[in-house]
Image (cartoon, rainbow, N blue to C red; front, side):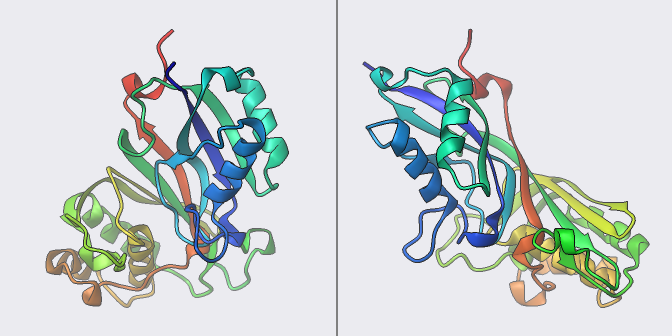
Length: 259
């Protein structure tokens, strides 16, 4: 009989991990989730994720799926969430579990993703968020950042803002539907949404926008960087700790098993 498929939504603090994927050195979040599944399913299911977050990057809405034989699937989706969390370290949590359609794939059917990046813009870091925000002590010109951010929206070659992943990408063109700055006191949140992201692309965009806020680049410079498609002309890469994979989007028909 066919295996049953489950969709998991996972949140984690990435501070202690070498990213999502199982690693040759260090520990990936995937490794911990698969170890928890192995406690509940004798078939030791593999987990397939929607994204590969980098070392030190966090997630609130990572989506993944796994398959298991029907004979091993005795508990409800709600019980599965509780049981997995009982075996996971406290910095990783399954926030939702659901049966998925047979053809669902967490990565290949993802229609888009939203990342959020936090910057604490004040002379003194807020110690409560030191692991989840980039501390930028110097004052930032927020109108200048807001003037530059819309240049990233639309379909562009983002090579100037991405790092070399160590292998050749078929295309470095991506489409962003949102790139905006929100502010609550000293806490700045960059919201970036699109159909896909290159290696360290979000961090390259945020690092460059912060440099715009520091007066190093103008909005027009950002437009030229996009046109040149060369990482050497782009701005700096923001540190990993401020970045959160916030949400993964799916077209409704692909997300859940009908009925």
